[in-house]
Length: 248
Ligand SMILES: [Zn+2]
Image (cartoon, rainbow, N blue to C red; front, side):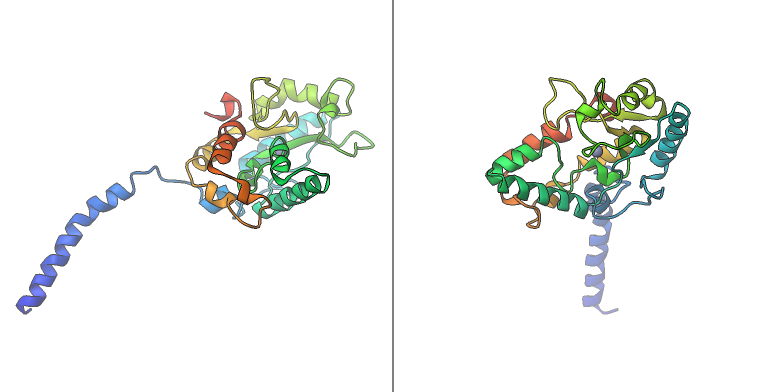
């Protein structure tokens, strides 16, 4: 080894000696179990079920609930379970287009839409832990199944609603968008439940990633109107507007 190579070698060793410390400071963030793409609906997790697509534990809990509900004459089904980013984007874009055709400005259309629909990339349905309960024993099925009136006294899903209120938490499902008048964000959804055991760890990771980057996608209608203030409010009211049972 000549002198020049020797010095070069020492210099490299010096870099290597400082590397572990450098790497340590870079990895002080808690490690994640789920990929960012999975958290925003751009990568499908392993799903179970044929018509209903859920993560394994969510699917097992849903199946147990379904069997028990069947014994009291309910044919519990989920109107929607796993939904991808692209699927959510189709729903979002279609609804925005319809509202604009009905005379709303794009901003008015967005403000109205985020009372009932999620911006693609932020839907809990991306996680494979969410269900929208309906009762297929009801014949004929209502045209608009996910309507609050169906779940009220006298509504077609009245019996389903009573049974869910008494039993659903035993299976690990918790109402996500409650009827609390102090709550902002999404309106009351008596059908939408989260399987907390799997949804809560995912939620914790989701709120710590840069999800805003994924909603600033020009293929999402109205994305140019998502200002930092708008997204902060959406985060506080819509994403965090869930009960304590789902924030654990
Ligand atoms: Zn839902």
